[in-house]
Every structure is written in structure tokens, then in C-alpha cells.
Length: 492
Image 1: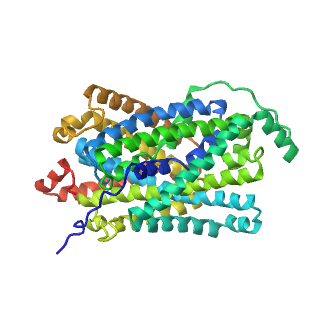
Image 2: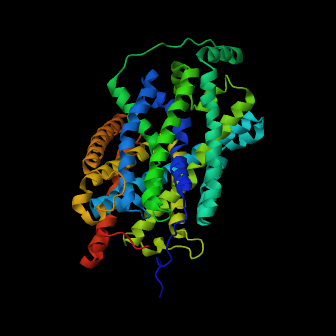
Image 3: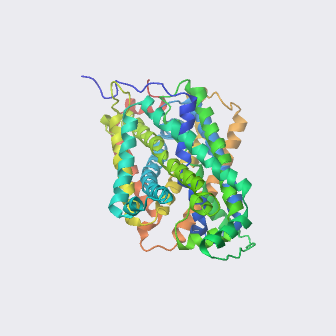
């Protein structure tokens, strides 16, 4: 009798596809919404959004370097789970990856839900008022979000070639249309914006020049903006499908975080150069805002529609890459016996983990419904930030413990081989991430909310407690021989 894992994943993804997986997981709401809605979520940040953005990149870069180093030694599906379970501790490996899986599963639903207003705004820009009104209705918004999720579940199910054909054109379109925003920042300034505001709305706005700098507000903003740099980790989850993985995985991770980081900063700087921060802060307190909506005052109608389209694409192309990421985590758990073995079933022709992908689609659908009933997508983002800070923290700690816990696998590290440099990366990453996690948790627990379950921290703790129960039940069922699998990599 054949076992579900007999058919294996195959190495078909080159450097471009791997990099696109990271890029498309990172760009989306983070670039078009979060740097501007943060004026409402962290009142008082004012003109210090860009410095907070730059500061938020520091722990993300350390985490990316840790991921890159670990991926060179352990290139298998479910990257973060394999790294921590083999290089730190099996339980902590599961917690690190379950935290990641839970956060990303929720945020896939959030992204699909947020996509619909961007599509509506494109319809408004094109003069399709009836369609725009239809997209405003709750049933249509939820329904279309679910359609987007299952469309990309289908794309992933069809295999690597289908995934590439969907992902790569959207990535290039996203960069091309997003570049319009950067160019606009060079060609317009706040005077142009204020003149256009008065001409279109008859509104005279007096910008506020400055506000006092507050370290507490700055650090709170940086902790939230950290969410903008989450996504490169999805590259590691495709470790069993990468060509020449020991080289291509680290390269793709570093290419993704540095290219997206530069693009983020230029994009946000362009918008804040044109639109006064005080106007953004005032508008954010009254309604949901985005980069395309803010720049629509100064851009010609055609270009306004173009950047709206780019924003919609940036959100939509998060979905296939994130679905790949969460499905490979479940696949890796199932291969180790923590999840039911059937979840590791690979389609014999398409070589995709189709059971894991379907479960990922179900979880993302729950995220859509949660976003709708919660009424605030920032709850989903807060859950993701908590989850990924814990994940990145454990990856940095793994980099410190790896050679001692598993010296045979540590010998296979092929990038940044200097142990002293590894210690600096792991140590500084650990310190920064602990700081960010404390700040984010304090902000979450002290923020006003109607019910306790609108705080991300208790929700995360409950889910992690459930994950811990699942792990220990399975762990006690393993014989000493079966536990030895947690010291080696799964066979290909």
C-alpha cells in the first residue's frame, strides 16, 4: 500500500520565481494603506512615519539574514518549521511555524477582503458607478473576497507553471504602476496638492508644520510598520521546490527584502512629499485612506486609475504567494507526523500538496469572515505582527543555537559562514525583536477595544495554547526512533 508522501514535491522554481514569491507576499496593503492609516492607529506619529519605517526595517533585515543562512543548510518545504525544529527544539519549531501559519492564514483573508474596495475605486475612476455601488454591498464584498481566495487556491493546485504565469506578470505590473507614485513625488509638491484640493473641493487646508517627537509613539509606530517587511519568509517555505536551493533561497530572500524595502521607502516618501502629513492624519481619523486616493487630487484621471489598478494588483498578488507559504508549512508538519499524514499528500501529476492547499483556502476564508464581522482589518494585521515577531525571534535564536544543537546540519551552511558574524546577526536580531514584541504587546493590551477578543495578544495566546496541546499529544505518541526524524531533514 502506498503512503501519501510517496509522491514528492519537485524542484522547478528558479531564482526569479522564488524572489517574486517573497516580493508579492510583502507588497500589498503594507505599501498602499498602512503607512497612511497609521496616523489613526498610532495618533501623534505625524511627520515621523518615514523614520519609523526605516527603524522598522532593522529587525526585519536581521531576521532575513537569519532565514538566508538557515535556508542554505536546510532547503526543504516548511522552511521556518524545519529550521527551528532541527536547530533549536521540535516544540519551539512547531510553535514558531504555527505562529507564522496562523498569522498568515488570517491575513490572507484580510487582504482578500481589503482588495474589494480597491476594485470598487477602480470602477469609480472608470465611471462605472453601478458596479461600484454593487461592490459596496456586504454580500458582494464578502463573496468576491472568497472568489479571489479560491481562484488562487486553484492556481496553486495546478502546479508551478500555473503559479509562475499568474505571479510574474502581476509583479511586474505592480512595480510599473507603483512607479507612477514615485515619479509623482518628484514632479509635485504640497503646494500643488493644496491648490488642487481648493480647486476640487473648495477646501482651504493649513498644514501643521511639526509636532513634538515622542519615543513611545515612534516605537509603537515602528512596531506596526514592521508588518510591511513580513513576507520574505514565504520563500523559505518553498525549499523543496527551489532549483539549486542552497544558493537560490538565500539570494531570493535578500533580493526580496532589499528591493521591496527600497521601493517601500521611495513610495511612502513620494506620497508624504506631495500630501502634507497633517492632512493625511486628519483624513485618517475620519475614513479609510490609501495612497491612490490621496494622490488623486493632483494626478490626471488616467494616471489616478492606473495607480488604483496597481494598488489592487499589489493586494491581489499577495494571495497566491501566501497560500503557497501556509500550505507548505502544513505539508512539513504532516511529513513529520504532527499533522495527519493525508495533509502531506502530493498530486501525482501536478506535484502540489493539494490537501494542504485546500485547508489553507478554508483558513483564509475564515479570515475573510472575521474581517467582515470585526469591522477593522487592523485586528488581522495586529495578529499577523504578533505571530511573525515571535517567528522571526525564534529564527534568530535558532541561528545562535544551531551549531550546538545540530552540528552535522550546521556544517552545511553555505552563506555567511563566519560564526562570529552569525552570532552578531542572531544576537542583535533577538534583541531588536524582543524590544519590538514588548512594544507591540503593550500597545495592543492598553488600546481601547469593545471586547477582549479584539485584542490580538489574547487571541494569539489562545491559539498557541491549542497548538501546544496538539503538539504534545502527538509527541507523546512518537517512539524514540520516530523522534530521531527531528534531527535530520526529510528525504526528497
